[in-house]
Length: 389
Image (cartoon, rainbow, N blue to C red; front, side, top):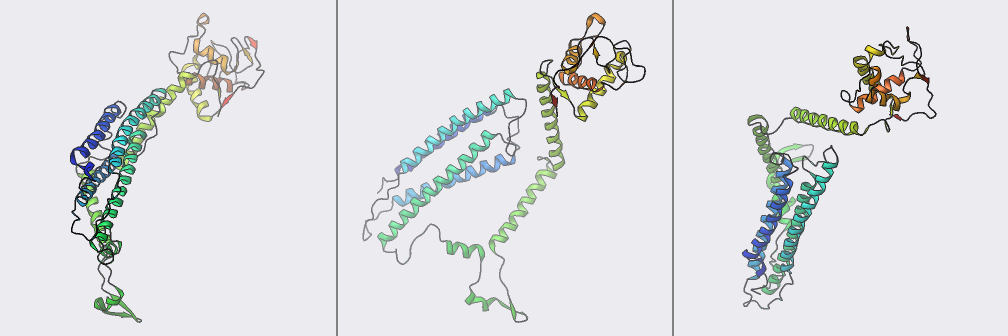
């Protein structure tokens, strides 16, 4: 039985651990390309998950050492020598090594996917508590896998102790156990048995109801002490050293990020609008934006109300270069150099040209005072233009 658990020797366990750390390092090196500088370092969720992973890893190491020590107990003096427990420790170590390798390769593939998505879109991928999806889910998978290994090791230790109990004749009397839930419950609640309540009975009595002088449950006291520690850490982090942002700072940061994402989105959308796919804007904000653009750039030649001055009247049904949002968009974009109208594509974005074109379409039939005589050909669209809601 001495060699049953030799696969938990320091060299081989350290080899599996180093293999996992190597893959984590490979992942970290690749992830640096897309993760912003210092984002992970200041992310609380990352450190919480990392601490859980390290604690579970330490717990696994401790349990494996305990299992190794139990396997080396000499049972020659026992009445009956138990059979060797069928614990496939080599499978456990093999699974750890395989999972570490798989997680490392998976992280690289996931990172490549995130980079591909980021390059195809201006918007940031969905984040989990400030972490990218690949980092978050790999850490969660690592925690779940470590928990599975912990339960496997606990089961192996329980089985070993059960065999030792049977061999030493303690199975019916003083059974050894890894967890004694009754004792655990009593220790965390510190409750006095009913038959001993007379010892803690006070002199206070109300309508036959007696008061007991019970201690506060340890779980409650330790939880209260924990809140004190957390409050001190919070105070130092947020108000003394100011290493973490306050709510208003977080709000402003999120608003700045949203503004950048909106700007990037509008730029990406603007680049896709042209005279062939432009649609009519009918929203109040879009029309008002087009109106402001018109007053700043077009009113000098076409009048404040589109009545026409140097340029033609824009409120009737006659057009020199075609009516409708697509034709107007094309005319504004490329201009009419022969008649003195410049191309506005260098000064206005496609979205702005769409907005001002939609505003001009909305001027149809307004009949402003002093309107210029119609010029060009009568234009009537066969189909209603597509609109943007």
